[in-house]
Length: 209
Image 1 (tube, helix red, strand yellow):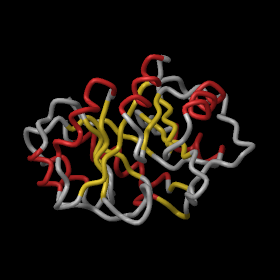
Image 2: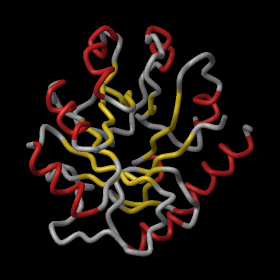
Image 3: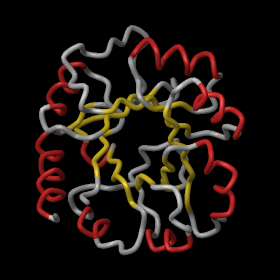
Image 4: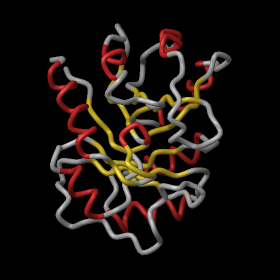
């Protein structure tokens, strides 16, 4: 089964529709106002966006009510939680019918036992590079660290993924890798994606299977 593709940090309507033509499996929209890729306050999801593409809202320690409102206003399928959200917060979103992607920032010292409490309240985990920013650091971590994970919950892999290293990602063996998540590695500028670079990724992913 091929790894799925998520393009994160989408913001501009024309760019969104241009990327959508390549049919990524997921698109991420950032609702964290300290991110340079945050959607504007007057953002409207393009009506032409295919329902095939799962829409993911990215939040950082956001109140439940604001997450719920954003999900309903923009027709989001998942809430991707990048902060220190509690298990109870995730559970409440799940009970409201919202998919949950819980993010963990990885470095050499990360204890994979810390993901255990979130297994019952997450559809997926996302493993990203521990850095100064909540995503979009353009830095990779040692992906071999993922061998320490028990692989019980399927995960997205983020952190500096681009066409130059995507083949290395796909060589990871015996991991429950569900999707690769790309952001700054395919950008022209923050929030504006290079369609040709994404097309390269799509071709590589398709050629592997």
